[in-house]
Amino acid sequence: MSKQTSVERYEAKFPGSKERFARAEGLVPRGVAHDAWQASPFPLFMNQAKGSHIWDVDGNEFVDYFGGHGGKVLGHAHPAVVRAAQEQLEKGVQFGTNCDLMLDWAGIIQKLVPSAELIEFTNSGTEAIMLGVRVARAYTGRKKIVRFQFHFAGAYDAVTVGYKKPFQVSVSGGVLPSAVEDTIVLPMNEEEALDQALRSREVAVVMVEAAGASSGVVGIKPGFYRTMRDLTQKYGTLLLFDEIVTGFRYSPGGVQAAVGVTPDLTTLGKGITGVMPGAGAIVGKKNVMEMFLFKDEEWNRYKRVSHFGTFNANPLCAATGVAYLKLIATGQPTQEANRNARKLRDGMQRKLDEREIPGCVYDSNFSVVHVYLGKCDLQGECDRVVCVNALKDRPSDVGEALYRNFALHGVKTAARGFDLFVSAVHSEADLEKTIQAFGRNLDTMIEEKVLR
Image 1 (cartoon, one colour):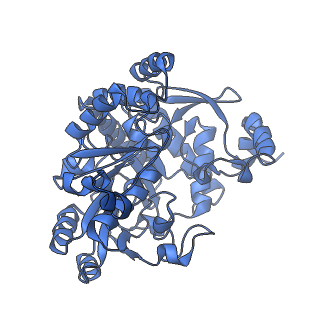
Image 2 (cartoon, rainbow, N blue to C red):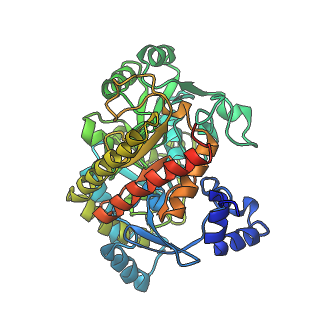
């Protein structure tokens, strides 16, 4: 009898997920509710999570490294956040007007995030991006926006270019050419390219994932933060940091607080509540955010940036946001998550080195660990913090194999197993289990000739 392949073992170990996925394909287009959940040969169905662990419908327990798409620095179902949600559910979740908790929530964000002179709450990170572009265009009177290669910014039409090659083509059907014709996509870390793009003074905003593309897979060189700030100020362009993942994870005040560069606008998302659904925010300098103000009739009708949203600053999200951010504000959770990430990074790197597999396990100065498998152009000069070429070698079959084999060893990652979001509540046992699972993962991929 021949040895089972990893795909066969996966199908045998997760029969409940396999059966549910077959049903889902007849109910939900593509069988998943989010493109990033698609997995080979099928995604896992989960029904419970607590702390750093998550359980599937077959009762299998995993160490979770996806953590609400990166927003759960304190893990799943933190007692303080759960208690806040339960108490607010008894009082109501949508009042159709302001609530006291909105003031507390906005106040904490204002104290933590350097650019947050004023806060406009939204229903999601994507909506925050949409409003960020809109308010930048309204404030500057300009049309064009600048994005960087491989940077992700959600589902808003204008930012669906730049994420994948060819960079000037939207990642989605149905996006009109006119929606993206004013979006300029540039290589990261290249001062001359940015200077040339801004010289015409037609660019409203430069948008950047604050730790680099795809949560730091391709990092930002430290000096380039100041370059972006100096050039945007020189040419009258706004600078927007997308801190939907990095806000409250990189540091309590995000990347901007850590690197000492304050943008004009910042987008926040899942992290402002610890991933209670229905929350986001666009925050920024007072003079820019005043585009949302009501003034005279002419201003209101022709210049003001309007914003609606049934669940904006709803009491449930505000309650959990206050509870979550009070814990984040101490600084301890981000420190612990970063420390855990370094331990995981170093342990996984040892597994690569022991097998003499070309590659690197690195971070971008915060608690997301990335796996790069392939020969490095830097030939030993890399500091294993900022990788500038990792997205060149991310074959889908390798990512699928990483995910699948991690799952077989009790580790849950995103559907491409290259990236692990580490939390403050991952234990030493969790980290060691993951390091050992990575080693076995590599062995299987060598055996199945995924790695050559």
